[in-house]
Image (tube, rainbow, N blue to C red; front, side, top):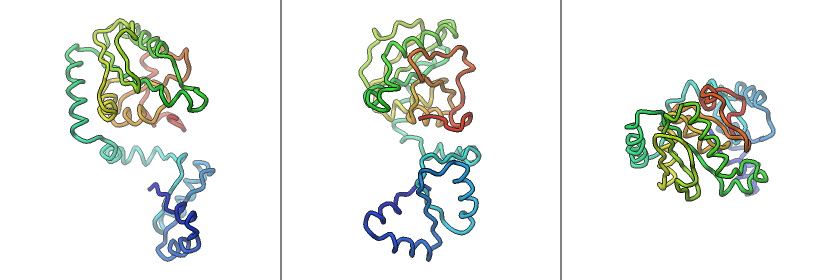
Length: 230
């Protein structure tokens, strides 16, 4: 459970009172962001049988629990019916071409400043990645573009059966990426969570010259590395 109540109480100078309440009700807050994953796991193992554990620890990952409860997690992050079904209609139209659908997440506006622009890529970087995918699939592919900037088809000179550029609300875009067969994009929790929701293999664009050399480089999100995404 993720909770900031301990930080709130400390700022209100009620830290001692919060400690007393936690002791009375057997509540154990964990808010040290510097703890490593193994240390957090061990602390949880010790504390969880004793009472309720409140956590504010972004780096904590537990793949075993995620696998165990993945269906419930998917229910929790799935958008409302209106967004999901609108995306489903768009995907259904693309499926008429009878080819794999690749969702392309282009994130630029906030990434110009984040981490000094490390993942702020020109549109041509995404286009190059799409060309490589088209080459791998012999042009038998449909692309669905979801971007935080206005895009037109003249940005993408890519051989493909179909190129759809979304101008929908972001929750429809999120649902679109979830319902594609593959996704690509820079490190982003938006794409990562969408790929997890749809159990959709995904490829991270981590540099300007990054392209998949084979479709086997698309992997299931959250299951393959100690830190799945940024």
